[in-house]
Image (cartoon, rainbow, N blue to C red; front, side, top):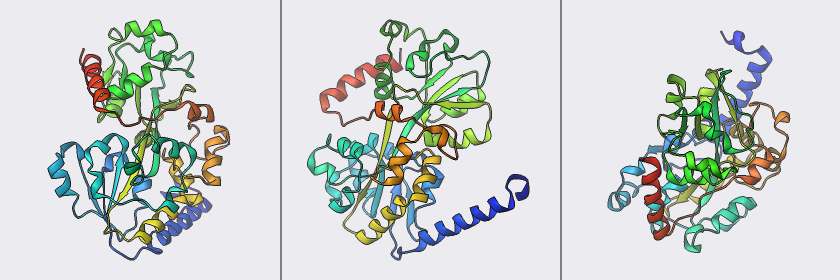
Length: 335
């Protein structure tokens, strides 16, 4: 069966690469580390890079209150968390990141961190950027004349067939990119579907035509279903940020070794193929951001440099902004 899918040489190369990662996962990782994260936000390729000696704990932050949050995270040495859930975390429980590690970050990461108070940004180590992607069914009846902008969302061909994230902030940010402002008057008539957890299942198993979802979460579907295609509008896409936060119980050398492993060129390229972009200032990542997509081996599509330049992140909200967003969200997501 192996020879049916892989030539002998390719199989040997894959075996060698797997062995290298096995050695890397064991090298310099000697102490037990309790690491917690929301597994649904991370591709398997990233999870496989967590050292075998570390104890993984899956968490569900949306069920946390502040009190239970403190209790459930008490025995954690290392927490991985997305930017949308940082408001659930008590920053006082975590330690500052070593400045030498923060110096590895690229300009985009440093700019994004500057949105946080100094006391918070010193405790956040960006470890991944996950861009949203547009996934469309390959169907002659579904045509997008211009996939460089987000105006296609209001095409009559897609009325009631577009699945958007169930996040008012993300949806509103996309609508702000609509070039033809007159189209926004039809937002209620377009009958968008709002779903996060089941968006890809809905796309595959219903009459839906398009889904907007984090790139890394779409990989397993793209690999097994040839009916699906993807694109990244040149006008940019929303970006999800992922951070590591450390406790005083963590052996800093263990953490540094893991960051070094993520920074290795082979690792970075493998993660990009999985839709996961490392926020580090390295030659490899600079090339991956800037190369023409046709020159990239692996997946045929990824964000172009123009898309990356126009993509946007979500800084923390103050209480007034949060209240206003909730009001707008209720009107938008619950018409």
